[in-house]
Image (tube, rainbow, N blue to C red; front, side, top):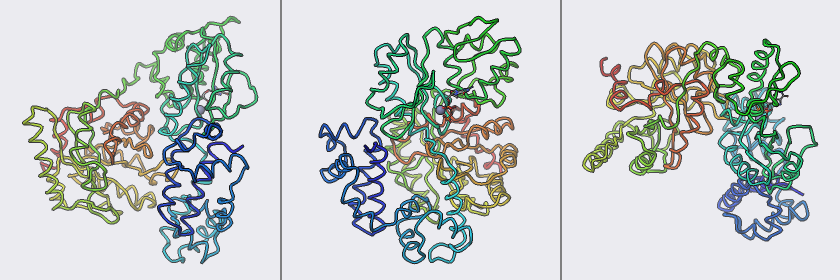
Length: 578
Ligand code: DGT
Ligand code: ZN
């Protein structure tokens, strides 16, 4: 019987195949919409089908429900079989390369006879792809990098995709008889930007009974053979969960152990060994007797440490920092009172200035700074000097309205200006000088050699009008590695000019990441956390950026979004004085 993930993948394959074959784009879009819905289901599609409820799912009509039914009942569907005979299976893999759309895939197939990823990789690495119409040497290099990433990257889940499934699991497991407590553990609890699996810890006095009940959960498709204290579950949506079970009286040690990271726990174990003790999920073993810990605080206290928050437990030196009283008091979501990087319908956003401002006000923000794209190649509707002037009028009018109504809320006019491949900016200095806040970001040519990539950012940092470098590496989780940067040089440049580096909270970016944040803070560089929202609903996603900043040890004062409006305005003094 096919699981949810296999069914969703088949529906995606249908859309991809139809697109390569040049079929009706509205039908293609319908299959993609259905695949989105199916992929988000945590319970079994087979059960929904058996109950005749598939068409209750948004975007799933009779036709698609019929195909899913055939896939479930017979293991295949005639419509899919026929469609896929017209497209080589390897071509669907080629379509998953971010640089390649259906048109170029069709050309590779028809003109070059390239029908799978291996053939494409060979063609790219031998320099044959650049000769194909529409490709060129730069695209060839990008494709090669993307294939290498696809072939080496494991199936790690982005945090944003893992979190809602974790919520569902916690609620479902929390409802089982005999479960006293259940919480996320592992890399998800530590706030990692991607996670290998969903780890949970639950406390129960009835380990056998709860294990049996876990198998029966509606989200669970199957389970691994019994390996002791962790129970591996395969979920219907294709994700994996590892559930650790503990008696309640060992909760603290179990939670520290199963939260990890392995390096962190190994270092705690070394500290315990110095005292002649050992440590594991059950607690400390001291002279053959077990010393249990009810909560995490007592685990750390037993080792004369203050409690270290999960986000800092990565083995980078947090235990030494704790011993020396140097652990940072990190930023909390509630410390943020401004979002300084988001887009509106003035460029490629979905919300108007007013809609975005209202969404920010609903989050309790005191001020916000818009950052629509500058006009530059490839950005539809980017702003030039004239459109920025027009946008300023709308901002002034909104601020006047807020002022008249007695609201203390203020809108600033920023801009996200492109950093060109040579480090020059896409807008002239006199235009930048009129803005309240300038974010300079790299968007194109992200595969430059290290020296050029580094010099590019350093040049942008040295422009006196630039206040912030947006998503400095340009990475996209699971799809695009960041630019090859000498980050020490970038950070040193930012430190010398007072330029602020962004922790972009976009769930596909989370850029800078924790190690770079730590290095920036050590050099005295300030940070800003922003959503880069393109929709009013995205503004609430600031929390993933806060989590990432916490992992890097950022305190509230290190992050300019916690500052007062007057302090933010002061950031501009550098450009005002030149
Ligand atoms: P992931 O899943 O790759 O994102 O990373 P984690 O940290 O979630 O690792 P995972 O899922 O293998 O295990 C979850 C936690 O359980 C891990 O952080 C530490 C603990 N753990 C699991 N197996 C072992 C083990 O064999 N030794 C030690 N010391 N800890 C383990
Ligand atoms: Zn894990």
